[in-house]
Length: 549
Image (cartoon, rainbow, N blue to C red; front, side, top):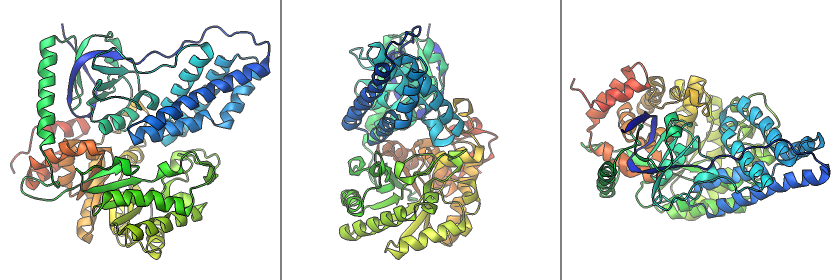
């Protein structure tokens, strides 16, 4: 008999096939006496180096730039001298290599989890490092994605970047995890690859490998124990859905012609496709990873010019370096902070290293001038009017005419009207705005309901920004994961958002959803979502369709 398991749908689409789980982590056996501590310490560090090498290889072959970026961050963790010293210290206390790695990474894990924010999101990455390094010490293969020889549904407690870096969408049909949330790595990768995905579905761990299941990435329903006919029917429905989406093209607009610019989030020129109207978020962090010093001016000019050239006559919205204590880069010398998520990050890093921002702005301006591209520049983690004014002055001074800011902090959302006196546009980062508005760690699965982008309070903050933009005659966009949800995109349009930026694979579904609704429909659905008591009710109200009146 078929059994229904319900989680949180985070990437739209249908899939059906046998389910297979990611290989389990290695189990530590009883501690082994250490006769030669120095040699044992070297063996432990060598295991970490082996893991770093393997992850680096995967980063180099990853087809998804987002996954590659996360893998490179994992490599930095595995190569961290502080971690190596901690492992050596544990061996010095009598632990064997495997137990020393386990203990040292457990300590790092606790520190990351306590820090919250981005560092807390990296806990799964540390767990993956631990599993891989311990496996090396035990002489076992590193855990990873199974290969059953047929297209399948991939399940796991949670997925690490190394698990998803080389995923082949023709083999892996969907992702289902027991943990995770709306902004988790699984969600981001699934949307980037165009795979249906469901997270927070604990029942999936009870489903034996090889069981036929169906996955609905919109509703979050996972049905286990279906028959062959149901699998065939589900796949046919998904093929029909994808064929309809593939037939869509052109700019984003509602059924009555109201324009909504559809843009892509990119990390490099490789992410750009023809089927978008431009770039709504060019993440520049890729250029800064794995470095003891920031990239030089000329290197930055070359990197930015590649993206600007690839965009052609399409707009490129570039975000300046989004890093700091919560996204540690050695050259920022941030030091330890009691709560990095609330510390010196984003634009705030310019308080300590102003020359890093000035060099980046100079390079952006030179690359824009050399290519003739339409470049808009924005700063992350802006909170006050003074910060907005200072950034705008710096950017305009080097010849960048269109200057904006990310809205990720409730204080900025509530003062959007004042901020727009200094900048030309706003771009709302719903992931961080949710985290800060609800005081809910983005990694904590137990708080996934608070981080749901359908939360009416979050929608109210977005609506306030859109209203401020309309009053000032300036555009307000959304570049967080919320923009990739077709149903939510309709609501955001009804709230007054003028552009939506997402992974390129998400654009066709969003375009189709907008084309199926008039602007009045969108506004009615937005009012219904705002009036709902919680995220689930908001979803249900919108699913019911626009009511007259």
